[in-house]
Amino acid sequence: MRSTSRFKRKKKPLWKNAALVALLGLGVAGAVFVPPWLARQAYEEGALAYSKGDIAAAQKALDKSISLLAGNPAAYALRANTRQKAGMLDGALADANRAVEFGPGQAEAWLARARTLCAKKEYAAALPDCDKAVELDPRLAEAWYQRGLVHAALEKYQEAVADHSREIALTPGNAMAYNNRGIALRLAGNPDKAISDFNQAARLSPGLNVVYFNRGLAWFDKKEFERAALDFTKTLELHPFPGAYIHRAQALLNLGRGEEGLSGLEEALERFPGNTDLMRAKAALLAALGRADEARETALEAEKSSPGGGNGEFVKQVEAIAKAAAGKQALPPGK
Image (tube, one colour):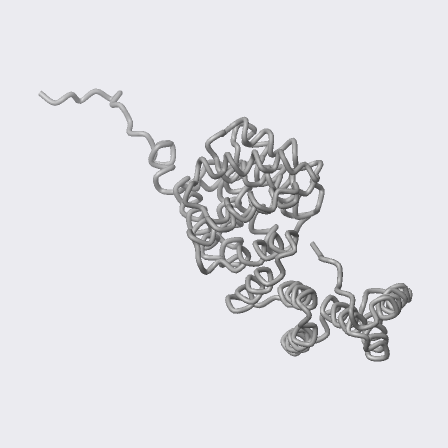
């Protein structure tokens, strides 16, 4: 027989069922429950956009992720990276600090702050963060890479070589790891070992223009100007930039082919009009070729293009080159 008791158990009102409230996205006292997967989805969208180089889309997605779920160190670390690439260095540093605050045990958090400090050229401040990153995750190749760059910037070249060696051990097929170690070896005064690393980088990634540029610098250090000029030419074929034109002109001058180098600098100025470094290189080369009047005119133009208009010192240097060289003496090697 069905009970007819007056004291029947009443059903809970729907709003008191917390689990159902959560599932429906309803909140208590006006709050709104946000499923964590929404924040995760936004984070993954940001990570994908960042990997594709779409910085604006990455930042938008990460803004959303952080607004949905504050306290995620990975989201702050990645947004720090996007802001750093966008040139928003103060915002990047603020995000990196939050990443370290929320994730002190995560190597990526410390690494994000190290990257930002490097972008601000605060290398000494970046070094402890790099140390912490490699301590937390010794298998994170990016941490060794970043510390190698910091050590090189601080002119601790042997330490940089050791860091990039660890990077190579973790990513043996990474051409840039060999390139970076090669740079450190060259700056440490070991051009032969540097060239060996650049050769390996070129084998791994034949289209990487910076490898040929850096190898060209090593050949220049060894006064093998023909090989240097060939590598600088290869650099320009792959992806031209002012520095490659300038160093090729220096190599050609040392080979007695200064006019060819001058022609290259004029071509470069058509490609990069108003570039002060190119104008200064052209003035110095004209002076070395004995064309003093043209050299002085170009030097004056370069000084006018310099921040603050220059102070006349470069013009004096060019005049001294013209006087000493008398159209014969080669330019000193540059780094």
